[in-house]
Image (tube, rainbow, N blue to C red; front, side, top):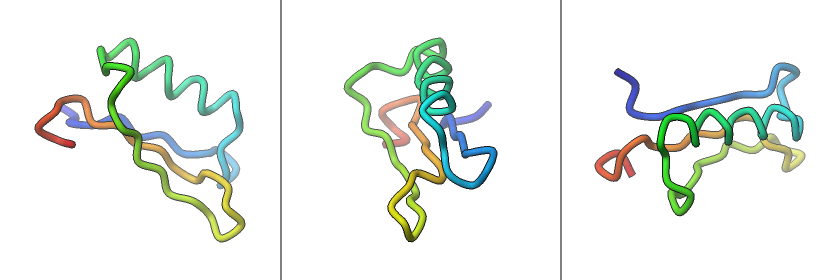
Length: 59
């Protein structure tokens, strides 16, 4: 079973629609809204990947 949810942009950098889908998936999985999100940025400062832990132990 995955301990986190991870998403990446289809064209390297994420779009707002892709980020919205990630948040919806995290909510469906029961991730609370106060959980910290980890992001990897490109050299231009755009979001490449995002990840959130499913449980407190993975934080």
